[in-house]
Image 1 (cartoon, rainbow, N blue to C red):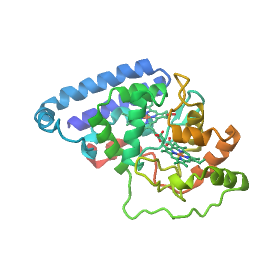
Image 2 (image 1 turned 120 degrees about the vertical axis):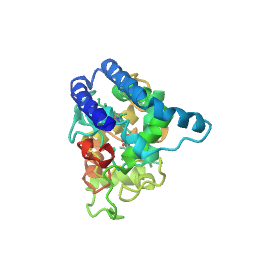
Image 3 (image 1 turned 90 degrees about the horizontal axis):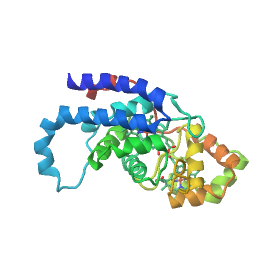
Image 4 (image 1 turned 60 degrees about the vertical axis):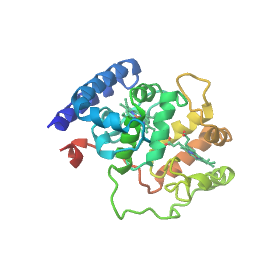
Length: 259
Ligand code: HEC
Ligand code: HEC
């Protein structure tokens, strides 16, 4: 019952997000209200657990995460939903992404290594436990057992893209099929929105000098800086065309954990 009510709040926030995707200061306010609500609802049940577990290592709990994503669903739960800063592009698919990568990304927004203002505002309201929980939730959301992606993609890159992939050896880290990266804190890229992949690559290229746009990750900075924006666009389109695990899962109230 409580979770159903919380789900309703998610819808209020979805409408709010639609209007405010470029206004992080208002989003902050929404996020604060959501958090207050959460705190009030769950404080009693959580109090004793917190005292017992505070000294232990943080472990993500997908079921707990399901109660913390109403705000997120307003953007990440709407297929083809678009952000308009600094250009129009699709909000990334995060369901089925690696948990450790989701965690790392949220911590980078929180610390300011990633500059995208709205996600910085969102991540700043999350504790390390919240981050671990929502990462566990999204990494398992929409995952079908038995679903596998081929080790080598059947779609071959054109000559321009093949040259870029060879020069930067993207597969050495992201996997030959761009869906099985070599480390769990590296992202799955196959099937991600092309418009988002391109913006992400431009953000690495921009580095961390601009306060509102860019990502400080040195590995991907070095990769992206070798190429023109036209090259990055061609790579983004190719990687997006490959079959992969990441997806957008809509209508969280159909998720059994919300019932
Ligand atoms: C107002 C819309 C909006 C809301 C609300 C929102 N996000 Fe995001 N999120 C975005 C956009 C846009 C990006 C891409 C930002 C960039 O370019 O770095 C993003 C990026 C991310 C990424 C990085 C994805 C990747 O592949 O690197 C993660 C993880 C993420 N969001 C998780 C969340 C979680 C968890 C919540 C809720 C606690 C949330 N987001 C709420 C719009 C939103
Ligand atoms: C040496 C390892 C390595 C190589 C080589 C590499 N990457 Fe990455 N890539 C990473 C890591 C690590 C991240 C996560 C960085 C972060 O935390 O922001 C990443 C992130 C990305 C992202 C952001 C994904 C998202 O969801 O936001 C894209 C896009 C990407 N890489 C594309 C490429 C392409 C295209 C190439 C080849 C031109 C490449 N990478 C080569 C390690 C690598």
